[in-house]
Length: 227
Image 1 (cartoon, rainbow, N blue to C red):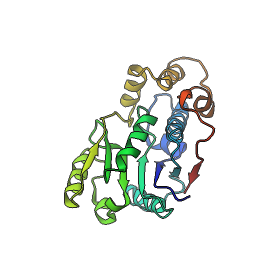
Image 2 (cartoon, rainbow, N blue to C red):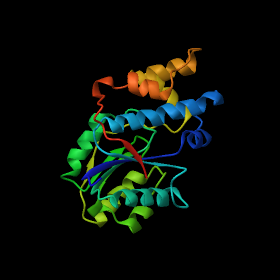
Image 3 (tube, helix red, strand yellow):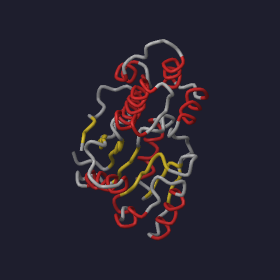
Image 4 (cartoon, helix red, strand yellow):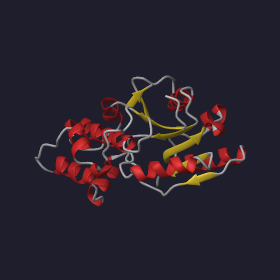
């Protein structure tokens, strides 16, 4: 598959995500929530028509987050892809339209970044020509200063960064409760019912295929490929 642009979905497995993050007080529902967030992000990515590569925690290579991400990114470049859009599972407000806009902007810019409101990033669009492994590994990953370190990275390599709109990501119970209480998306409504009522939530695959963003559904969407 020799494509100009691809999406890299970089994530923990649902079980690893549930072990690392507590998003709901009822621990028996924590893994289910993680499954839905992961499935939602994959569904949003697939609806773009852009090839999607996945890198789950049980497949990742490296000793640290930054090494695992760099190695996964390089594996996608080795597929012949020139422009990679990296996303995770913790920004349910990200839309297919945002991803398509990123693809278009990467044709004109070397770096497109989605800033999260906590100082991190929810999306990284990076052209292969802009990727410098040594400095990529030096970025302030998993810190509130990540956006500033990206600015320094771009300045060091004489690159221009296009910044997308700021969005919130979900890293804690407070973040999750704010999302389900303030968002009017179908995902938020369903998760709210699941957490705060006795209703049984449908399986992630049922929601993705039958409810979420149905207007974007296409049988011609490319497959999701595991690295």
